[in-house]
Structures are given as C-alpha cells and as structure tokens.
Amino acid sequence: MANILTLLIFTLVSLSSACHKHDHQTLLSIMNSFPPNSFPATWNSSSDCCNWDYIQCNATTGRVDVLQITDNAGIAGPIPPSISRLSALQFLILRDLPNVVGSIPHQLLRLRNLQFLIISNTSVSGAIPSFLSKFSSNLLAINLNGNKLSGPIPASLGDLASLSLLYLSDNQLSGSIPDTLFRKTKVSHIQLDLSDNKLTGDIPKTFDDRKFITVNLANNQLTGDASVLFGKSKLVSDIILASNKLTFDLSKVEFPVKSLDRVDISHNEIYGRIPSQIADVAGLQYLDVSYNRLCGKIPKKLAQFNSSFFAHNKCLCGAPLPSCKQEM
Image (cartoon, rainbow, N blue to C red):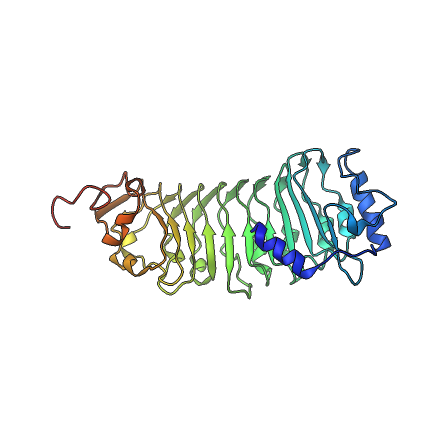
C-alpha cells in the first residue's frame, strides 16, 4: 500500500515555492499543539512551508495537499482539530506515532477534498466515529490499522460511494461485521482488512456481491459460513480467514480461477474435502488449510506446498502428507 500511496501523491501534487499564507499559519498552529522540538527544523515561521518535511503542496495554488507525519515518537498528544483548516488537503497520513492519543476529532469532517485518511500505528483510542460516513464522495481509503480503537464498526461506513479500501486491523473492535459495508461503493476493486480484532458473528451474506480483490478477516471470533467470499468467476486474489471459528463444507466451494493467489483458512472448524476444482486455479501461490476437520485425498496440484499447510485435520492424505491407505 505504501508504494501505491507514494505514486498517487507524486502524481497528484508537486512541490511549490509559494506556500499559501493561511496554510502556513495553520501548520504552525498544528506544530504548536505538540511538544516543543518534536517537529523537524524545517518547520519555522520564516521559511516556505511547501519545503517543510511532511508537507507537499499543489504547484499551481500553493495549497497543502498532503500532510504526512510518520515515524516520530516525539510527537505526543491528541490529533489537533486545527488540521481541519487545511481545506485543500487530499492526503492525511499520521503513521507510526506511538504517543499520539485521544479520539479522532470530528472537525476532520471539514476536509471536503480528502481522498485518503490514514491514522495507523498510533495510540488513538475510542470508537470509530460514525461521522466518517459523511465524508464527500472523494474519500477513497480509510486506514485505521494498529490503533487502540474499540466498539463496533459503524454500519454507516457503507454509505461511502467511492470507498475502495477499508483497513481496521489490529484494534479492539467488537460486535459483528455490518452487512452494509461497501453497499453503495461504485468501485470494482475493494480491499478489506478487519484482522486481529474481537469481531463475532457470521460473515455477511451480502459480501457475495462485493467486488473484493483482497479480504483479511483473520484472528477474530467469526463463526458460520465463509463460502460467500469464494466463487469461480470472482477476481479476488487474497482470502485470509485464519484463526476464527468458521464452520462450512469446503467440498461445495468453488475457487476463483483467474486471480486467486493466496488462501489461508487455517485454525477453523471447516469440514469436507479440498475440491478437485482447485486444479483450475493457475496462479495459486499459497494455501493453508491446517487445523480444521478436512478429510479425503489432497488434489495432486497441491503437492508443491509444505506438509504443515495440511496438518492437523481429520483425515487428509496424499502428497505432501503420507499416502492414502485406500483410494478415497
């Protein structure tokens, strides 16, 4: 994701030598909200803010398009509401800031041009605010990975028409996955990561018609049937469901044949056989079905994988495991 962001940033914006006066004053206010000397020396009242670290400006208008503050343990305290005064901001990236605390300020809703909201690997806590659903149709991505957020995932996030990426992993989120997620999205390449939380309940049946390219729900407490994420004609590349309590018959699953690269359904309660149809998946690079209740002969195509990927099942046999005692 970092490489994609870098490409987008440098495509959309470039450095300018004419920092907008209003943005210059706002950035100084943001800096003064944090402890002294926690920002680079480039941040000072006498220099052009478009040349500061963490900043990129539009070359024509001099407005700040990108605020990307990363990897700075000296920055401590809550997210300043004054960020909302950077009205031309398209990318807000606050990442690897372990001493940034508090909740996500509702004032951010004023950022009507925002396309990417990334607040990751901080100590931000509280609930995921429902106001995020009120962002304009410009918002493409929300990444809140690696914080201390708790409570449910707001069902209203499904109202964001352009949202193609929702990353909420490694928090303390609870409750069920809303069946409304991505219900209004108009994009054809959805990325979803809800891994490493405390989510419960079933995977929504509405996900059957979502156009996922990656979905990661690992390390939760999800139950029931995950077959809605599979399908012969789907274009998903990664399906990661490890370490849940999922129970369904794998024999009835059809694997995507055009795009599938990685599948991890280990550490669940999945039963049945590994379908022979998996031989039609040309690009499969990783398959882990260990620690389930699967039985039967492993399709020959899968002999290339490590035996540990099939271990601790009810009665799987055949390469790379020991041969079957009789034809199954």
